[in-house]
Amino acid sequence: MASETGESVRPQRAYIPWDDLPVNRETVAGFGTVLPVIVLYLLIAVLPVAFAFWASLHDIHTLNPVWEWAGIDNYAQVLEISMFWGSLWRGIVYMVGSTLIQLAVGLWMALVLNRITRGQKLLTAVVFTAYLIPTIIVSLIALRVFDPQGGVFQMLGAEWFSLWDANQAPLGSQTWAMPLLILIGTWKFSVFITIFTLAQLRAIPNRFYEAAKVCGANRWQMFRDITLPRLTGIILVVVLLRSIFMFNKFDIIWQLTRGGPGNATTTLPVLAYKTVYTDQAYGLANAISVVMFLFLLVGAIGYFLVFNPSEEVETTA
Amino acid sequence: MSQSEPPGGLFGLSYDRESELFETLKLVSTGIIVLIGVWPIYWMTQLAFTEYEVVERTVSVFPTPELFTFSNFAILTEPKMYTYIFNTTVVAIGTIITVVVVSLVAGYGLARLEFPQKENFARILLIGYLFSPIVIGIPLYQIWRTLGLLGARVGLIIALSAISMPFAVWLMWKYIMTIPEAHEEAAWVDGASRWRGFRDVVVPQCRPAIIAAALFAFAIAWNDFTFAEILLPATDTTTFAPGVLREMGQSQFLPDAYLMAVSLAMTLPPLLFAYFMQSYLLKGFQVRAL
Image 1 (cartoon, chains in turn yellow, blue):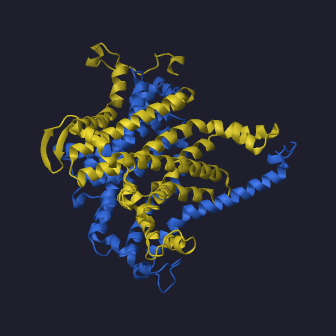
Image 2 (cartoon, rainbow over the protein chains, first blue to last red):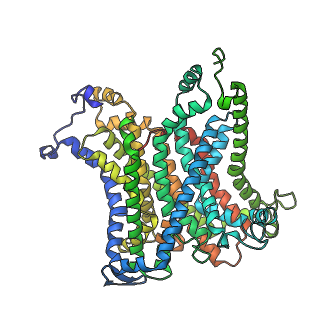
Image 3 (tube, chains in turn orange, yellow):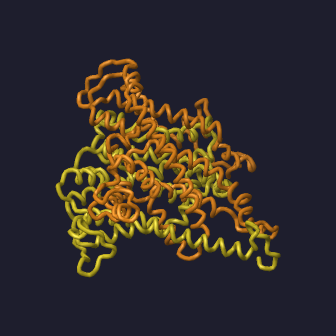
């Protein structure tokens, strides 16, 4: 964009010693602007992951700082423990189930919120609040309404639908813990998809629809030919992000069930956390988290190869 | 467009019938959204205003005058709860400021300055989202302990800022790309420096993206449980989420009505943000895809 008017209008400044360096001043300034990002990134992503990898090659008791070299023993152990494969499987169930339901609910909410005329602002605010309030509060409310003592959902489920016994806590039952975790997560995280989709919907000019109407298109055709193409790019991105986030989800699971009952809701992040703080095996826990990361990396690369959500970069702006 | 011929409807329905069907569907959908969106918040609110003994025993749908009470909110002034909420607020504000400043500068650099590998840099940043908070948090515990940041709010702010960063940078980059560079060039012609151009021309126009990034950072910080749980073991710096969970584990009796009262207090700021900032927020998120 800058080339249209040439470089000459760019501000000139007095002589600075690094003008003599063999690099362009703009390159230095450019790297300068992203330097804080790089520092933070190194500190919080690269360093911890390198550390995790290094730690995963040692036997470490969480409370005892002595590191004993173990080589790949931890990895062999990770793949051997039956908990690992079970947790991986439960994690995939949780991730796929959550993402699909969230996508459906999120899209539907965005389409409706975009079209209603009365109370739109208020309803949108309330829906967005679900994403912004602390997860712990969602958990507290959920624990409350599914509590056998005066919990309204527990009561409805028991008395109206006979899903569980009157004095049974559904979050503590092998059958219900996982589905409920998925549903409670859906309440909060669908909104993430709603926000992005709604932003895209707002950006579609109304004249597109008016033109389509003149040409005799019905609502389905308008949706298929105008709305959907505008949404695909962002849908591919949010599905990727949501899958990753749900696979990595620790907080809401820990708060609601602590991985229980038994191991019914123990996914890989929960297993890693338990390994550090319950089993005190710091090295093994790091091995689990490295394996987790590798799974996601492979998954994400696969997703990029199949759908290429970054294709849109070129068409932006 | 009433003057045009009404087009044929869906499923062989006439256009008017189709519109009717659509309106009904919309109404039903709105009803369901109100129910699932508003209901939990209503439920929390009504429990917060009901006598706690009643909450423990029965289901009350609406606090009748004899059950209605403000006394549950007394828990907000309890030193521990007060500290938790205060810490959460400090961490949230710190994270927002860090994220907005850093992402604005980096976004400007990516959009306006030429340097090698910048596209790849922005993409690599997003790989950061593959790291689970657990994957990062467990090693970070040791690293922060070595650096002396364990149990410090600053440590948590750094961690949360770094988590919100890739997305905020990407958002800001894409948003600044949509602002014509000619605006700055006009300022440069008038003798403004690049910094002046950035400050007086770009930043004011970035308001939607700044608000979107700030809200995203706020959601991350206000929401955070995992990092706070791992990185803030001390009581006087603990934030709300892990604090309240530990309280529940430790105290024999922490009435649900009290918890709902605290929850309501923690829900109000997000609700106000969502109400007053939503048009900016949606505008900020209008950038397309990665």
